[in-house]
Length: 313
Image (cartoon, rainbow, N blue to C red; front, side, top):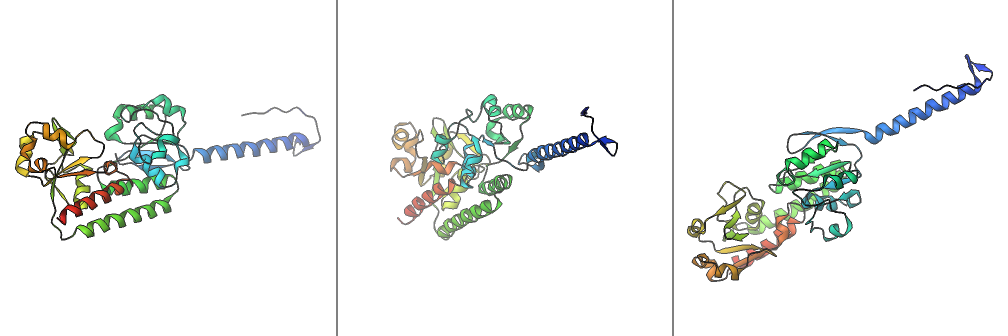
């Protein structure tokens, strides 16, 4: 950039005095502008759970979360003021849906709404948000950090990653320590006790249940029970009812507020072949246990209490 000044004044080092002073002030202003601009846009590279290198801003203050589980983590770290957008069906914490605007559904959120919020970074789940959404956000020049949510270890790692982005490493470490303590306490209480066999049912026609890779299966094991489908190498799977009859589950696990009820199972042909259905042996688990975030530990403790109750019978 060039500046032309035509003020005639006594010269210092070949320049008029006033021109020299103005030029000096201009240079300092230019340096200040460039410094502030550089600091506000400064970023560092981090590798996300998909193995992608992401330019993460050094000072993140505007976040869009495309997953209820990631939203819960942000709130649990006390960083809700930095959260500018969430998705539909964000139930936890309850105040999130009241306080934050939604950018649409988890699977197909509005790119226009996200861009209008001017986020420093977008937090997303590749398994749910979809490749087209992620590619669209990248095309708009928005940094997108991807997370996995397959197990409890992922919860701890995600808390660490989000805490690092937000400059809340101490809060993240403290939160993880609290959650680990709760997890270990539940494991200890289940040690040495007979594990009831359970069948998770989220749909009955067709039967949809949890396999080995499902987050729910790990939570059931931690709570002191045993999923009869834990050796099937999938997460959520569809099975014929006849395939689970030989497993003879002691209890049926239903999700609180879900579409399946004991009455519906008893009225559906074939389900009364299971003794657990005949005798109404049902464990209704808190739906928070499905959310792979800090709130899941509330659901885990509820499940553990119910499992321990049936173990004492």
